[in-house]
Length: 406
Length: 139
Image 1 (cartoon, rainbow over the protein chains, first blue to last red):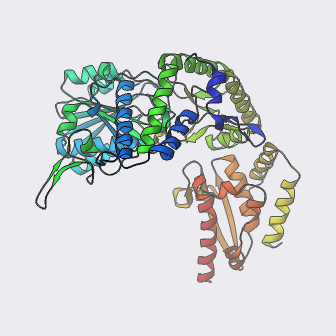
Image 2: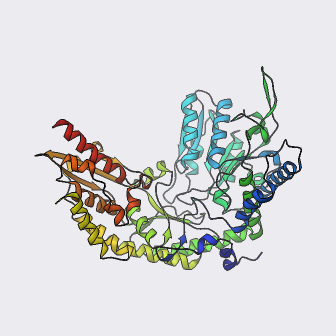
Image 3: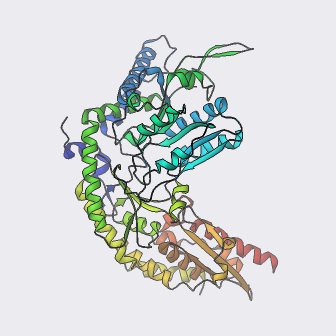
């Protein structure tokens, strides 16, 4: 499928609406992306034709829905190039995937005096679960710093590793700075010391071709709704050797093999981690999203988004007093900035009234915002359906903000 | 003037403008007319924390009336704070407690008072009414 922005925008009817008498410009894609008709149709088709509880049913619909569900798992496996489908666990989002690993890995492998390493650029979802488990176990959470341009300070990260380090939990792409971390290099270094690495891929999968086999990561977590799929749907990829070792996170139906009054044995992977009736409509939607991205091609998407990012930097840096947060050379398509000392809340409110959705505040990354000593940033995050013209309008809106708050 | 009269005055001022950006220009002007809060009250003790912007609020009780001073680190928030202070400051505790502050809705700024807006304004109104209640109980 050729990369035609006109055709792509036609797939996203939500984008053609008018707000405050202005055409909607949606730049809050790092929070959630819009959904193409293909995803919306997949969900409604499921309820129109296939709805049924999956796995154990012997009747026609149950078999059909189960097949579609497991087919979706295969497509997700292929999308991230996981070695096996039983290493692909469906969750309700990246946060749940991260909580699952922190809780289950922590329960089994982290004890008093141990250490977990994370970074200052993490979303709270890859920070707080580790803080909690370390608190419970009497372990220490160590936090790697960043360099002034928003790159991870690798030297500092590596210097934190000791013989007590049990796991490194790191984001693929910062949701505030856009920095793409050199995770392959970090994983190789950590493995040379025998330490597993979890990658928070919530901001990675929609922008970058992810190959978990090539990365050799031990866990990779992401959400469906940030990659054009539905909300309440996420994925945990985990290496088989770890998933086999980890205790279940939740219990209930589906995840058990045998239950007697005395004892329960657990189901095989990935079902051990999928307690209860799963979000089947979500999985159908995610499958459609994966097919959509695959058809466009992740390399083409990356190239197009890079051109948006380049244009945004060109236009915005021409505005006097603009301060960017995150200017690393390897960066996903988002810009975080402040205009002089104008409060991000003020800037965001006016930009909204000009029809442009941006996000303001700490972006669920308070340690990072505190590190900069600012009240928050304005973040414009781009997706494959955004245009150069929309970025021009953002630059105009930012100039307008500057005049208003002079 | 009564709270209702003060509210109507503000609603009339906003009625003159059609475009949202002009309305916000007016909000910014209102922020500038907010009497400054004594710096000694700009501490954590007097802070009303929202997720995004902060509000500092101080109240005094004199001759049966409550007097508020306030500030915010965001200018739009400060503009709305200024409106709330100008409407409620100098009123009796009873009047403050029963004020419905519908003017915010009438000028189309209801979203700013929503607790989900996380700018501290919804908590600020609660706090103003709480001060009124406490002063009334003490007097």
